[in-house]
Length: 208
Image 1 (cartoon, rainbow, N blue to C red):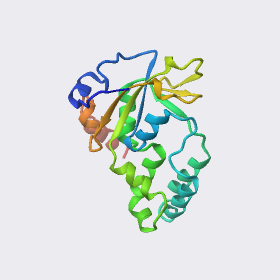
Image 2: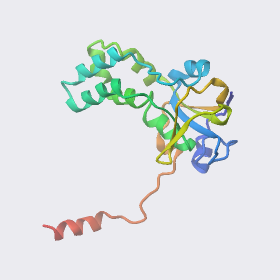
Image 3: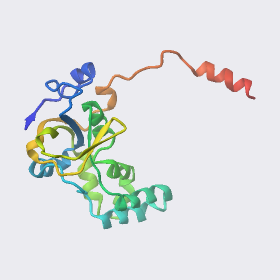
Image 4: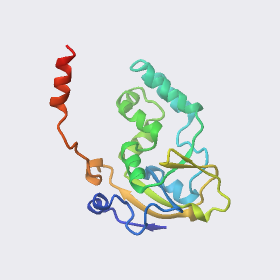
């Protein structure tokens, strides 16, 4: 597998993470992840139904944060029962956004704000959260055309869910994203053409 150097200026200018891969591409899809998982991904590929945590550790974390937020605790508990979907983005920028905003995946990134409280209770999931919290992130480019008869379903034209493991032979490129990278470092923020605050204020006055 190739490893392309991280170039935030080029990413921002082209809206593509991998300069040598044309987008959209009918064969290549992308996956944003944490480098905490890289050794496993790069030795075993992407595994169907793999969870980086133990369910009892997750349930312990939910019990601890229930005193702070019942809603968040219920969300964490539900992750134990929801089937894991092996998902890939159609665009490298979508995968990059996911890697930056949801380090370690959706469930663990949801727990990260509670790290201090979980540490206070010596929760067993803390070492995994620490590893994710201190690791770089990464984006993989994956050639799904190399997998014969792969059943692939599209969802809302943004991502692909696949129904089979993806072997390491399908990994064609990788970019490591420094963990301190913010979205504004790599993505052009579109500013509103007009300042709507004064318009909203006028509407508010008419409704008083």
